[in-house]
Image (cartoon, rainbow, N blue to C red; front, side, top):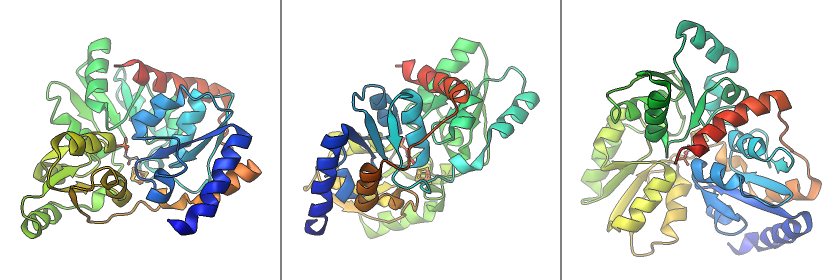
Length: 307
Ligand code: 13P
Ligand code: SF4
């Protein structure tokens, strides 16, 4: 990426001057993921690592809900979002008021919300979860609360995919969908298998259950990367956002990655140029009302405490 060298150099210098670290989600473009990001991973890893950050400034190379989560866990630090428009269709699908209404409908039923939600929604939740720990979290909550019904919001497909693994618990879902993963179809997978014999199919659990049923394995972005590292398939396809395969492929030159491409327009809003601008100007700091933040933080911390 020779064209990016000057931006990368400037960002590295600014990080030192500002005592800043950059957290990068697995869906970030390779020129960010492999150059300026200090800590990379799935949503769960970024939330866990955010707790240990010692810098004064955190730049989120990811989407807005991830920056909010980092801010919740680091209230005294400056958390910068290089583009405030980097949202998420799941986070946009539900509000705090929706959860309050659901609670009236389902009194006594605990609320587990996906980390892909606003701080306002987290504040109305009992626990958060990510795709990497959803099964563990719902089992924990059912046991802790002595219940067999849980509101699992807002990703309908994640709830349906998790439901298959916890038949003893009734998961009540919402109608939120990830605009990237909902586009994959079972026919896409069958076509991939026909056109690329022997391909191992890994899918993200934000995909519809019919798609996951056609896959060989389903897991979070980190789970998929780990699967590739431990199983070393000769040929693999990651049914998820396309930059993910670019980033995993860097470490596995011997593996053939088949690439159907669904881009997340929100993740793509983050560029080297706007990361640099954020660090230069210190504009784009995420702020959360302290009372709301305290309640939202509790839901995230309850999740992190589950090992
Ligand atoms: P994970 O990294 O937790 O698998 O999440 C995927 C995603 O869509 C994040 O926006
Ligand atoms: Fe949201 Fe889907 Fe983009 Fe992840 S990939 S940020 S879930 S829209």
